[in-house]
Image (tube, rainbow, N blue to C red; front, side, top):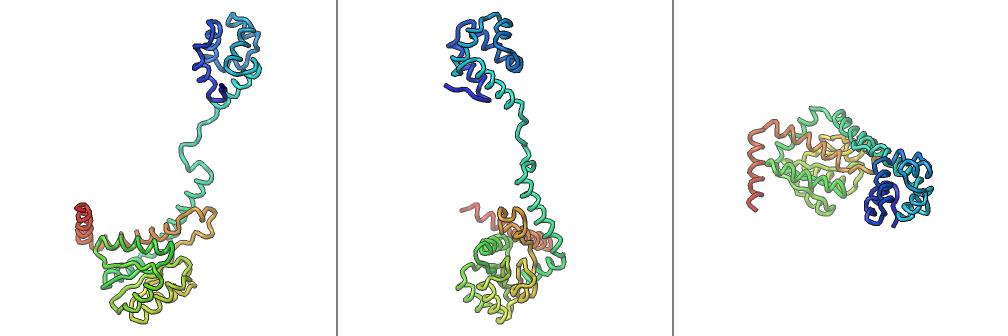
Length: 279
């Protein structure tokens, strides 16, 4: 068998029943004093423990080393591994996790900087005044649209999410002036979302757009455009979920909506949660 690095002393302990009394005495001394043994020559160890150099050589061979020199080299390696600082327990001390952490903080900070309280209040007003809310999104924005639906439906907002392009166009044709349509596109250039938004606006619907590009067609079409943080230029941006900035924005609107009608909204939320418990 082979005992290397951090397993060396454990390997010696596991082999105790194969040692002679002199070898067992040597093994015990090594286990208790590895630092000292790693600094001594074979003759110094033999003199110290009152055994022969040949006994030391046989001991080394029994634990799969060619001789004392090879064993001593591995013992020093064991000591180096043992003395090596333990890995950081805080993952923020690891470079790439630290960069990722900073990117998340930047997304949060930038979102709060870009978003004005007036805009959040306006969004809440549109939600409260709409007879029905339609949320359009494709791909990752579609995932965000579904999250918006379930989040706000639970507190009494009549909302539907449309993630199929053809269904979005048909749905938008049935909108009225009592409808609120929310178009989600990080780039602001998703053709399917823009086409549906144009039709809904022609039907008199109010338009709330969520995008990262204020020069985009989607932004220009909206009665209320909300800018989100773009992660495309971040060093670790490709490792961040594209829905993260969107979910943060939803949380801001949700919190304000609940705060303005707390008792009613909480009662509705509790009823929906209680209904789920009975399933």
